[in-house]
Image 1 (cartoon, rainbow, N blue to C red):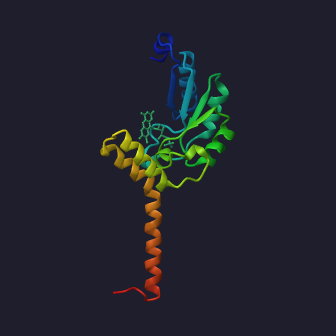
Image 2: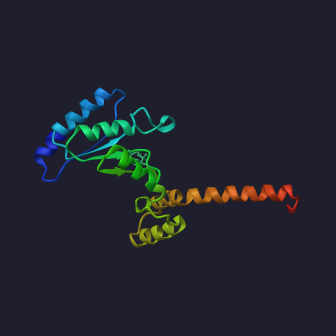
Length: 173
Ligand SMILES: Cc1cc2nc3c(=O)[nH]c(=O)nc-3n(C[C@H](O)[C@H](O)[C@H](O)COP(=O)(O)O)c2cc1C
């Protein structure tokens, strides 16, 4: 499929793979994709079995080996939770870029390296969604992701506050 696309399209063909349980099989897959004409390869450093409850650690070592074995740009994916992780991953694996998914959904400003106010981001997103007349069905889950961490912190703080008041017997009954 990659070969057919690479031969017939005017735009570069990029691919994304997960690693396989055995290193040799992963390397064989990478070689096949590169030989077929792929221009950029993104590697998610987990196997397909590592999902949901079994997510596990992302294998940066394997991504590094892949990067060192090919002559096309390689992007790393998986386990990038914040800006520092992105920098660490770039330095450790030597890849040309990193991709993030889950964390970007929570903080779209992740790659800016700045600590952004997620409530503000939620408001900006609402503005854009309103301008673009986005269906609320799509807006709701995005807002949930932006606000979830903050709401959790507020809930924890409320619980601490209530517990302290209870200890001091200040709770109005
Ligand atoms: C909402 C969502 C949609 C995704 N869609 C795709 C997809 O279409 N193709 C794909 O290869 N991976 C898809 N993924 C997987 C991510 O690209 C990524 O490989 C995975 O989430 C691991 O990266 P992360 O740890 O940064 O989340 C999706 C992930 C999410 C959260």
